[in-house]
Image: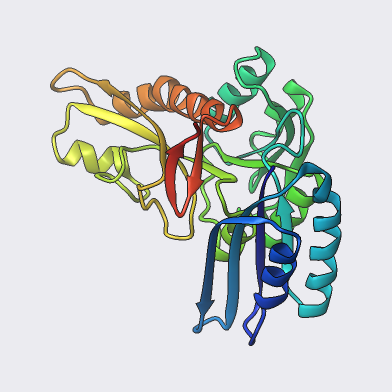
Length: 283
């Protein structure tokens, strides 16, 4: 059984020791380990990917909870096989097409997952959650500023396996990324990476007189749109002289939803996974 352990908290000496000592003492096979000391923030972050017998999983979770209480670390123990059907959090802001496509694909059986919750920093797409009978959680204030701690609480409350950023127009802070590291956060970027990162990829490609546009579904790591974590990409071509508004409309309506749906499907079907910040195919 593959298990991902993440730990986050105030930096101090020897924080990783009790975690490593416990898993090695249980005979676990360590496939990946990463540790980061963010000196400017006095923050410690750790990811450890291990293999254990399924029967050891409950005891591991209990032991990590005790270590977290002792060290002051926020420790999460997760396995991609802990639920028979993965539970998704679908995060969105204004654009309806992408979250709708994921919800519809789940309903139609194209994505084998449970839509556990719809999360947004705006109220606009509440109706979408209600239409599909999914709980809606607002984590933004009147200006749309997101409460990132509230988001983490919601993800824990609904026991989410994967976080799907379906045109969620806020940057997740590193603290959230580390707590759900190891290939649990899936993002839809509305441009082709690595060529067109940032917040205005359609505009940038249009300014470069491109005739092909695209979208990228990728795993999130703390480095924004790094591009090395690509799960799926999808492109479309336009005729010379097509105006920017028509290009954006086609991308948002057709290309982006299809790109994200296929990317999410690949992840929940465990065709691909993240290993040392690189996407690899499961054998």
